[in-house]
Image (cartoon, rainbow, N blue to C red; front, side, top):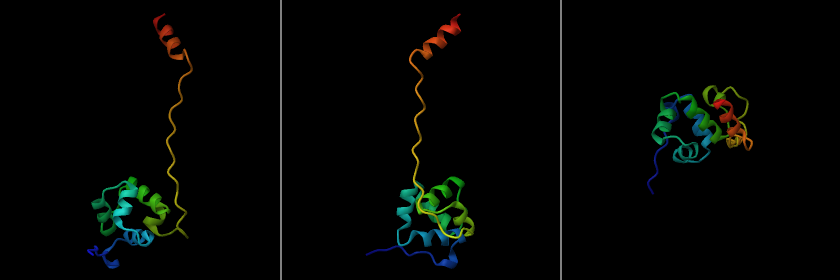
Length: 107
């Protein structure tokens, strides 16, 4: 069975250490897939690069914590996993509304 080695903790950024701790046995590939980010970017983030804001938010939500905790470790306890909220569709105009706008513009 070929298993990838986890980086040693001294080779990681502080946020990378917290990410691995919160993975709780799950793989980095799982996190990348669930967070919708590139696996290479995630690996780079864990080892040495500060994540982009959008990636940090996705990682934090997927791991059930906050960006503040990942970046600073200053939160008392990681929060429960935050649900992804659907984006509501814009409201449909009332029947006849668009037609009335066109009539006004022609007058």
